[in-house]
Length: 344
View (spheres, one colour):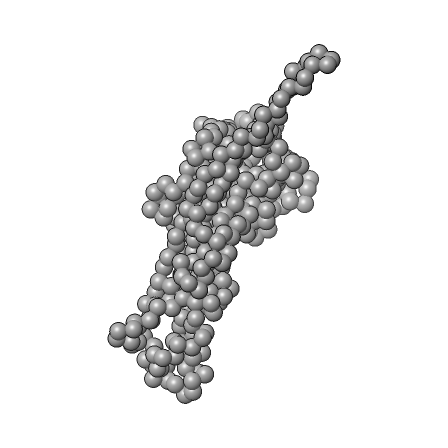
């Protein structure tokens, strides 16, 4: 029968468990894995300062020869402090749950117990990754909310910026105007470029995570089908023979990604008839990771997640793997975000 003192092995130290949990499994992570979207910013504290400054160009009034030049004022800056969010979860392993493990040797016993702990870590890690994706999906819309829908960070309100009204793609129109989709895309791209005030320069790309109904109507729109008719992608648009229903395609220099959220269609999801547009490569999205609240990691740069083991010191009846993360997903330019709808 397994001995509870096996958990005193160095394999269950906070350092070892944190290293292990950062290698575990997959959860929905389209936004987190998108190159150039969220810039990671590990920090040594739980408070993050965000500096805001205005560098909009201005016309220079002409002056007579010999007159003093117009004095350029300093660059006004505003610094705000924000606290990282705390995600914490645990899973209790009771002694009776592992009592069937036969201790043929300490090494065998240790390995089997480590498997049980790793299984619990994996489940918790999946939940944390889903929460990261949920927060990032909120950030690319300018509003980060908690699991229960409570507002955490309204970046548009914080930075006093307005997100423009939704763009009507008129996808329900049985007789659409020629080139209507391209016109809408061009309008959107111009608006985003103006809102970015030069951030990212020519490296900026625009992507959209798209609900199922919006994606299906867009890919079946006459304008899109005619555009792709003589291209290699035509077969995929015609009959879906590429085999991936959560696919993506580019049109008018915008990449549309049919977003696959959670199976319930609501926990982490894009509404069926909407598209969420955001710039990639402009550096307006960052995610800070705060350090853990234990002496093992004090004053160290934050990591994505941390894990350690809590033992029942009184009765020696259970151990509890715990998983923590301290993220802060930020959108510094919410005025560059856009929403598209199927129709008015």
